[in-house]
Amino acid sequence: MSRCQVKIKLVCFFHHKGIVHYEFIAQGQTVNQQYYLEVLTRLRESVRRKRPGLWPDKWILHHDNAPAHDALRFREFLAKNSITKMDHPPYSPDLATCDFWLFQKLKNALKGIQRNVKTLLRGIPENDFQDCFRQWHHRLTKCIASQGEYFEGDSSR
Image (cartoon, rainbow, N blue to C red; front, side):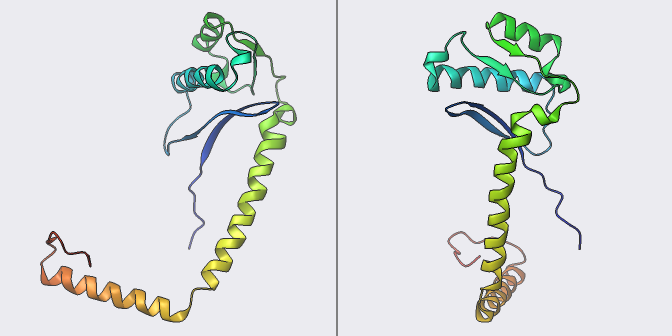
């Protein structure tokens, strides 16, 4: 068996009063400058709706030095929308609030979920597993009998 390699990617923007905007990134999506500009467009709308006191030009954007965060189109977007960008020192992940604070909170919560899932899995009674295999056998038999055809109204499939 191998460990699951599925990663969940999250883009999150927050303010001293709370979360302003977050998005889960679709599996396989590359975070390039085009995608990041789309995220920033949605972020602007979130700031306008959720933090009107910061709208239109009283907010500062701070993030790490990922290439998409410093592309020419990105800088043009910020200038056009009067968004101030706070520079992030190179090689300083210890200054990225998501890295040293937010993601640590999420990791701790996920560890709790993992423990709860293990407890739930261990607590499933043996007869539930037996019932599962009986249902599977019943469905498999019906599938073979119908040569793989689905019959509408057959709620047992």
